[in-house]
Amino acid sequence: MAFIQLENVSVSFPVYSASNRSLKNRLIQSATGGQIRADTVSQRISVVEALQDINLKLENGDRLGLVGHNGAGKTTLLRVLGGIYEPNCGQVNVEGATVPLFDIALGMDQESTGYENIVLRGLFLGLTRRQIKERIDDIAEFTELGDFLNLPIRTYSAGMQMRLAFAVSTSVVPDILLLDEGIGAGDASFLDKARARLHRFTEQVSIIVLSSHANDLVRNMCNKAILMEHGRIVECGPTEEVLQVYEAQRENAKDRSKQAP
Ligand SMILES: Nc1ncnc2c1ncn2[C@@H]1O[C@H](COP(=O)(O)OP(=O)(O)OP(=O)(O)O)[C@@H](O)[C@H]1O
Image (cartoon, rainbow, N blue to C red):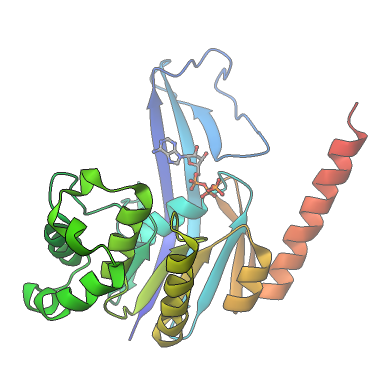
């Protein structure tokens, strides 16, 4: 039974050697990004508050869409759920096998061959060596990389690396699937094949969290959504209600920019 619970989760990034002079220990508000504050101890450190006080509970059957402006914190939240980032404070409880279909090159080694990377990424995703061995031929076939699988992956194009990572990541249906919109580089025929696999896959997954700027995709895929702004959740509820708030905000922002001199 898959389950996600976040309580008062915050993530911040200290940015060293950034000029602090203009911050003067006050909050800087911009249209995009997290919130920047000056570090109170050191004059040479700025801190980007990427997530602030996030509370979230997801259960079996939930399909959550994350929407919001650039830098609102969507990817950071996905990375916290995927165990890639530890929060600075708060509690993260994720139960169930989790597959992140973003940061797709994580767990791959440029000097190792395609076959070796199938094993490495499989282990990174929590598969046992036996499970990997059982699947390796299917994974290799899905990539269509043929003899390239015997070469180090530094010799691959971005699209070839994506084929390999996608094939391993989708070789077992997880309990929790974390998705960033789009699945990266890839030629049209592979993208068609990848979409078909993803579609079958998503029907069987217990919980999905999707970050996207494509509201129609969120409408089609998600039953719940959260709207993020500067690292905070500002709306949470049924997808349509949240998207209406978001779309109204975007229209207002467009009107304001038209009126600006
Ligand atoms: N490694 C990092 N170091 C410093 N700041 C970071 C780092 N990663 C993210 N941030 C900051 O955290 C904030 C949230 O970024 P995040 O990537 O989560 O946004 P997002 O909502 O996914 O944006 P987009 O829609 O543009 O992908 C941004 O202000 C970004 O500058």
